Each structure stands twice: as C-alpha cells, then as structure tokens.
Length: 329
Figure 1 (cartoon, rainbow, N blue to C red):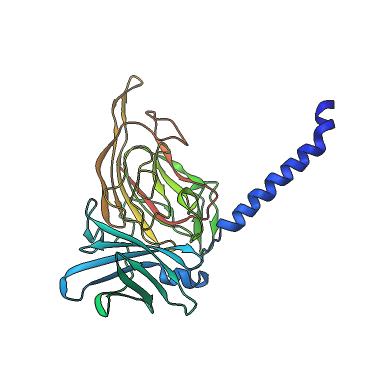
Figure 2 (cartoon, rainbow, N blue to C red):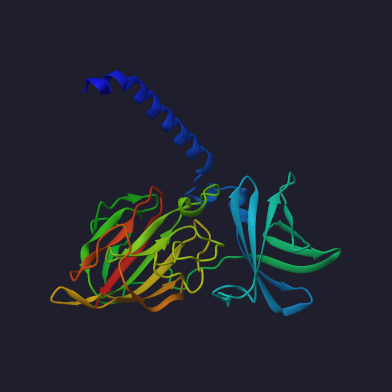
C-alpha cells in the first residue's frame, strides 16, 4: 500500500494520458450519425446505383459507393447487377476510389474511365463518349415489416422492452443492442430487423458492431459491411464458422432483416449427437442454407442441451433493433 501511494501521482498522470489519447482517437475516427436527415452530403452520395452500358442495355451494372469520411469514397462495380440481384459471389468486380471536389461533385478515375457522381446519378465516360449511366437505387428487404404469424411470440414491437433482460428503448421506440431475451429457445423460427449507425471514419469491426447470437451460442455478425467482400466476421457471417453466400449488407442507417430457421444441437446422456443447423436470409436472400454449426462461437454461452436466450450483442455502438418475433417448433 505504501509503495502504491508513493507512485500514485505517476499512475494518475499515466491514466490521464491514456484517456486523452483514447479520447482523441475516438474524436478522430468515431464521427457517428443515427439520423439519416443529419448525416450530411457524404451519406447522400453513399449507396447503391443501377444502370447499364450505353451501347449494351442488356448488360446491367451495379455500383456500391462507400463513404470513408472527408468526401472520400470507395467504389465497387458489379457486372449483371447488384449483390443478390444479378451478381453472385465469385464473379468479377471492379474497385476504385473517388473524391468530392470543391464544387460538391464527386469525381475520380477507375480503370482508365472517368467517374462523376452528382444529383443521384453516376456518369462514366471514356474520353468524350458516355460509357455508362447509373441511378441511385433504394433497395429494401422484402421481409421488412413482416408480421408475426399465428402462434408467434412477439419479443419486441416498440411498446416495451419487458421481454429482454437489460432491454433499453432508444430513439424512435427502438431496442438498443446489449440485451438477451427472457424466453429461452430451442428449435425456432426468428425474424428481426436491425439498423447500424453511419460511422464514415471508422473501419472494420469499429463500424457499427453488434451480433445476433442464436441461443446465445452462435453469432451471426451485425456490422456495417456495406461494399465489403463478405467474410465470416462481417455482416451475415457466422463468426469463425462460415461466410455468407453473398454480402447482402445494405448501407448504414437503412433497415435490414434477418430471417432464421434454427435447429438446436441434440444431446443424449450429456453428449452431443447432432450439430445445430440453420438457414438464414439476409434482406430476403439466402446466405446460409441448412448450414451445420459444428461448434459455438466465442463471446457468450457454451454449447449445451438446454434452451438458451437470443442475445443481441452490445459492442459500444448504437445498433438498434425492431420487429422481433419468434415461433418455437
């Protein structure tokens, strides 16, 4: 105790310096928006675009424009349309970068062609010739707002968080991440809707991180992975087990859906005799089809024979959920 007191001033100074450094880092890369109306010009530019080659209308083109902060954007171009709507994993993409100029117009060069984004339209030129035109798309999940069927248990409809431990209602009657259902689940069908914040200067796992833990054991990642490749630690991935068949992540601040069919692992005399399995649709597209889950994922509860709650992971990000219902089998 005497030794600690002797060096206490240095400990306090060190802790203060660490805090200041962390706070400065947060200020630098944690620009954060939860309201699309206040998210600014970069958010308006960010998103999905659809169009075609000017000389070949039958060849559809999709483009995702990903905001990186300070008027900078990554661009991914997809042949045959957008992911899950014409383009499939394994097909070629073209990647590049563009930036907003002093006149407010976003421009850049990708594969020798000039790209201009303004007023919700992308124009690609090859010299003086217009090569392609694309217009802003506004894709919505076909299961958005899905109503619970007869016999379903509504876990959250915006009126109360009573069905969740640590449940907190925020913003427009939304459920904040970092809670688990009081109901324990075995085999079940699940629907939920989620929205990630807009954090343009954040990268990777800092960009709106949460997770939907089936039975508190198997994490389906929730993250702003818009425009990324779709790894097992990105949105739709089952952490450390499987990447999604296609990255169906929509832009941040857009409502998205998970629809799940889950079969729990089976046990006899305390020994597992069959692995858990799941089929998952992300924004209406199957990203895991009767996938076997050979083990649990880290971070919550170990595998076991007993039913367990749905856990919505808190990761220090204002990820929110709504319209959560479950049908037990």
